[in-house]
Picture 1: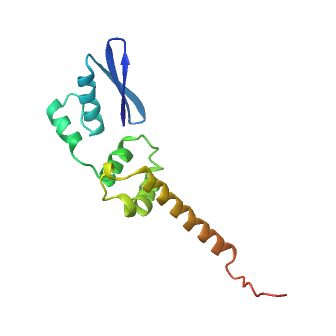
Picture 2: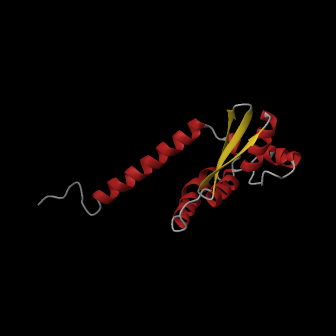
Length: 137
């Protein structure tokens, strides 16, 4: 994800890459928007603007975005397998094939509540495993 901020007479695009903050300044907002689209599409900023604009308009699935996000977010190498596993087992089955722009915040909140309920049920089942309600000493 990249952001644009006006700085004096220019516009600065900032993003994180390899765990470090990067940035570039442009004279116009339209140039900054093109650069932002390039960064978010995983392209170097010097790529032709038309190509970046076309790529940024292409619908991206959650799985596409996750792959790009995990690769460029700067996580410690030891934590990447865990994060990929979380995506594979929890996020991907529900949202992986969906376009990013088709998922609503309400859907995500509902899904999180479902996950919390399942975790609570599992925890409850483990607490009472082997104990019958009718057990009497």
